Image (cartoon, rainbow, N blue to C red; front, side, top):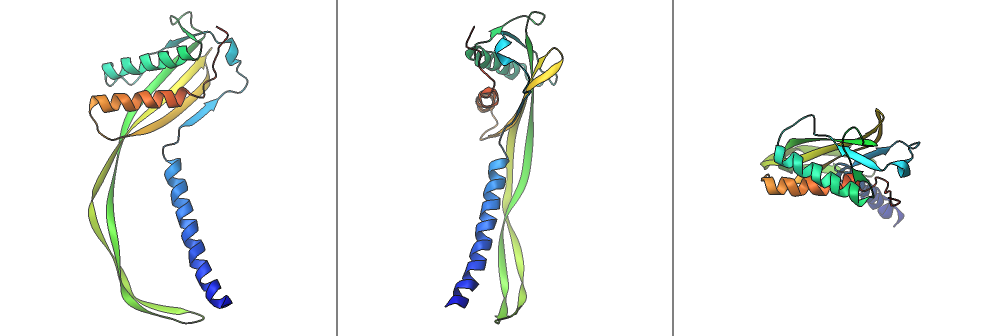
Length: 189
């Protein structure tokens, strides 16, 4: 009874470790990366200026992102100001990426002899392609600068279900909100 229990527990543990690692890799792939400079006194910040992106690619989407950033920061108690009067400058850098991957099914053929202390397996495994899979992502990086130093940096990506302009705009809006959510609010204004 103990031998049977020991034999089944090792493969079961291996499968659990594999599933945990796969789950962990899947969760980490789209998680935003956010950093704040700890010594910054965020409560003293009153005004901001949203700079146009350095990598201009679509003026309509850029205007929408600048508007969304402005709305989020105003919701946190900051006031929009001109470039020269602002306490902080907010820059954003949108980009897109496409990942291609194929799906396949593995088929194993063969025979095996397994004993108490070892085993022999003869055969092979065939991998049959099932189809191509293309996933498109919209990436966004937001940088907040005060007096020439970065005080807040956030980068993330959103998987696009469709690549029409409305879907991209919605994905970017959600991504802006996610990336600026941890930015400290200033409710004293």
